[in-house]
Image (cartoon, rainbow, N blue to C red; front, side, top):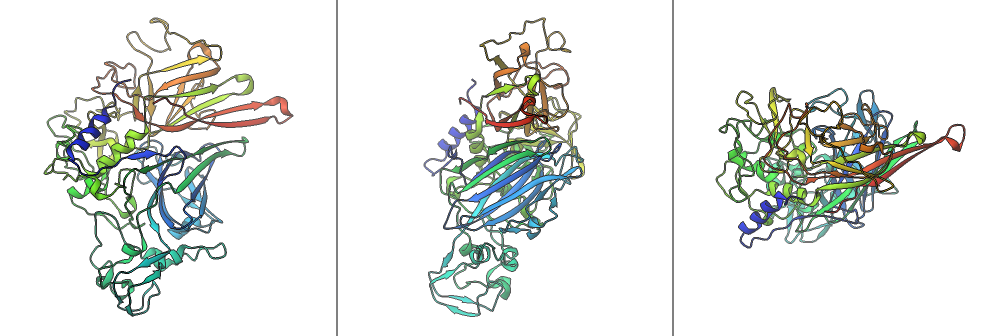
Length: 599
C-alpha cells in the first residue's frame, strides 16, 4: 500500500504548531458518536428508509443537525434540526413522492425546526441544488447527523443580572441574583407525559452561537430589544447560557432500507466519531439568513468551496505549512469557488471544526498567514480516520436462488476536496468537460492537487481505483491474460474499476440498470466477477489510481495522474436470496454485512 499522503500533511501541521494543543478525530468502535454518518438512504424502486436517532445522554438535551445529501455530488437535498431531550429517540422514514424523496416523521413527539418536519403529509426533498439529474437525484444518498450543542437542564449566573422586560423566555423584568435557574430551552424541549412542549418562540428565537462568530447587530442581549433580553448585565446572551459544548459518544443512529413489496430489508448502523480534544458548540440557525463572512472566515468555517468567492484562486488557499496541498493549474486562471449563496442552514458540515479553537491555527484565505486553517484540519482528520486501502466482502449471486449482491461504498468527506474552474480553454488536466451549472455559470469539477482526490474525473464523477480480486468458495481465483479481456476492451487498455459518486454501489454479476439487491440507479457499477464465480469473497481496492493510462470512455481516452491514496470509505454489503421451496409464494431474505478492512 502506498504511504498515506494525508499523514504527511497532518504531521507537518502538528510540527508547525510548536506546542499548541491539537486534537484529532476518532471512530468509535462501539458505534456511538458526537457525529454519526449513515452511508445510504434510498426511496428508489419501492424502497423506504427508516431512520432512528437516539440521545443516550440521560442528563442533557441535544440540538442535532440532520442533513440528507444526494448520492451523486453530495448536494444538500434536505436538512433540519432536532432537539432531543435526555434519552429521547427521533424516528422518521424516507419514502418516494413521485420522482423525489420525502421525509415522514408522523407520530414522533421530539421538537424539530422547522416544526413541519413532523407533519403527517411529510416533506418533499428539494432538488434546487442538484448539479445533475434533478428528476431523480434526491432518491438516493447518505445522511450526516451532527451534534451542534448540549442543552443543559439549568443555567448558572456568577453575578447579579438584569432582565430588561418581560420576554418570550418567560423571565419577568427585574434584577436576578447570581444563582442557578431552569434553562428555558431545556424546558421547551423536555417531554412531559411523553410529549415535548416545543415552545415555538423559544426554538425559533435561537441565534447563531459558535466558537468564531458573534451575533448580528440587534440579535441578542440589550441590543436585541425586550423580546430578546435575557441576562444582560454581564454580557450573557441566550446561547451563552442555554447551549454548551456537546458531550462525546452520545448519539446512536441506525437505518433500515426496507422494500415491503419485495419482502426484504437491510439494517445497518451509522459510523460514529468524535474529536479526541475538547468539543465546542457550533450552532447555526435553521434559517435562510445569508452568511456574508469575508474570505478569511470561510477557512475557519468550512471546506465546502462551492461557497467560496468565485475569483479566489487555488494559490490563495494554499497552506505554506502543509506544502502545496492546493496548487494553481494553468497559471492560476482557474478559480476555486463559485460564490453560491451561503445560508445559516448550510452549517455545520463535516468540515466545520468540532474541537476547541485553541487546537487549531487559523489561516486567511488570502495566504497572509502560513499555518493550516481550522476547517482544513477538521476535514483532514475525518479523512484520516476513514481511510481504507481496500475493503473485503462476501458475495452470492447464484441464479437458482435469485442471489444478488450490492456493495455500498460511501465517501462522506469527498465533497470537501473539490474546487471549481471555468477556464476550459486552457485546462490540460483530465476533467476538461464543463460539468456543473452552479450559480449561473458552468464549472469543471477538480479534486485537490496532491490529495487522494486528485484523480477525480469531474466529467464522469468517478474515482478510478487500482482493482479488485475475487475468489470462489473453493480457493479459486481467476487470472486474466493479456489477450483475454472483458469486452469491448481494446488493445492497450486495462479493466477499469472505479467508485462513481459519493455513494458508489457495485452490483456483482449484473448487466446494468437498477441493481438487483438495493435497487440503486444513480451511482452504480455493474461488475462481472471474473471466472463466472457466483459465490465467494472479494477484495475491492478503495485506493485512487495513478495509472499512467486509462482506456475507454471513463477518462476520455487516457489520462495521467500525479497521486493516489487510500480513500475514506464507509458502507455495507447488501445480499439477497429467494427460497422458492418455502411455499407457493417463496421466501425472500435480505442480509446486510459490514464492510471488512485491514487498514
